[in-house]
Amino acid sequence: MKKRISRWMAILLAASLLMTGCKSSGQNVQGSSAESSSTKSSNTENSSAESSADDSKSSDPAEGQESEIRVAVCGEKAGASGFTDEGIAGADWAREELGITVDYIECKDTADYETNGRFLSESGEYDLIIFINSQIADIVSLFCDDYPEQKYSIVDCKLEGKDNVRSVGAINGEQHFLTGVLCGLITTGKYQDDFPLTNDSNVLCYAGGTDSPTSREGAAGFMAGAKYVNPDAEILYTIVGGYNDPATAKEISLLGIDKGADICTGNCGSGVKGILEACKEKGAYYIATSLSDNDPNQSLCCSIKKTDVLVFNEVKAVVDGSWSAGYNEFGIADGVCDISFEDSLYAEGIPEEVKAVIDQVRQDCKDGKITMPADVSDVDAWAAENQYQW
Image (cartoon, rainbow, N blue to C red):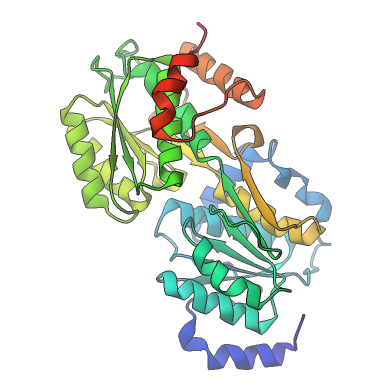
C-alpha cells in the first residue's frame, strides 16, 4: 500500500489547490492551540479511567522513536465548533502519545470531504483516514468502495455495510441525560439558594439543530433525564434548522426564557453561541455540549461527548491491530458521555443532595438499569414507566 514519499510529495504539490491546511509530520496538528490542547487535557484526564484509551501507554513507541503509522484527519476549520476542536485535540493526543504522524485537513464544505478523501486515498500514504463530521456517511459512501485497501473511520456518524469503514459515535441521548436530570431537579425552584437563576416555573428550553434522528435522540435524552426526576417539567423543544445559526438559536432561547425557562441548552453546533447570548441578556443558566463552549460566568454545566477519546481510540485501534469495520457507539458506561462542571459557575461543586442523585443515576446507567428513549415522541410514554425512586 505504501508508495515512495517522493511520489507523494509530487502528488501533493500537484493537488495543492484541492486541499487546505495539511501539516507536515513532526508538527502539531493544524488548528491545535492552547485552547484545544486544554480541552484535550481536561477531557482525557476525566475519562482515562473508563476509556480504552487508558491502555495506550503499553503501545507507546520508545522515546525518540516515531511510529511508521500515518493518519489523516478531515474536519471543519479549527474553532468552527467545540466538537471539531475536541476531534483535533484527540488527533494531537494520538500523535503525541502514540508517536504516529498525523496530518489534519480542513474541509470548507461537503464537497471538500469527497475531494480530499479521494486525494488522500489515491496517495496510498495513510494507514487510516478519519472524518470528523456527523453528516458525512453519504459522502464517504461515494468513494470508499474505490479504495478497498484503505481504512476509513467516521466519528459521530453511522455508516454500515462497508468492509473498509468503521464508524463510531456517542449514544446521543446519553450525552444529555445526566444534564437533564440536573435541570429537572433544580428548575422546580427548590434549590434557589444554591441556583439563584432558577425560578418555580418548571420550564426548560432545548434547541435542536435539525429534525434528524441524531438531533431528536439527543433531545429525547435531555427530556427523559428531566422527567425522570421531575415528571411535571415542561421542555420547550424547537428546531433551529441547522448547526451554524446562532441568531435563530438565540431567538429560540429568548422566547423560551420569556415563557419561564430558567435553563437553556441544545444540540445545534455553533448555535450554542446564540443560546449563551440569550442567557446573558435575560439572566438564565446556559448549558453547552462541549467544554470549549463553556462560559465560567453563565454555564450551569456541560453535556459532554468526549470526541477526543473517540478519535484517539480510532488511531489506537490501527496501532494495536484491533481496528475492524462496522459501527460502534459509546455512552455513559464507557466514560464517553457524562455531565461536567469544569469551567462553569459550579466548578467548585454542587449541593451534596443534588450530586448524590446524579451519581446514583449515572451508576444505574452503567449497571444497565436505565434504557433511554430514542426519539422525542417516545419521551412521555417512557417517563410514565420510568421514575427515580426517592
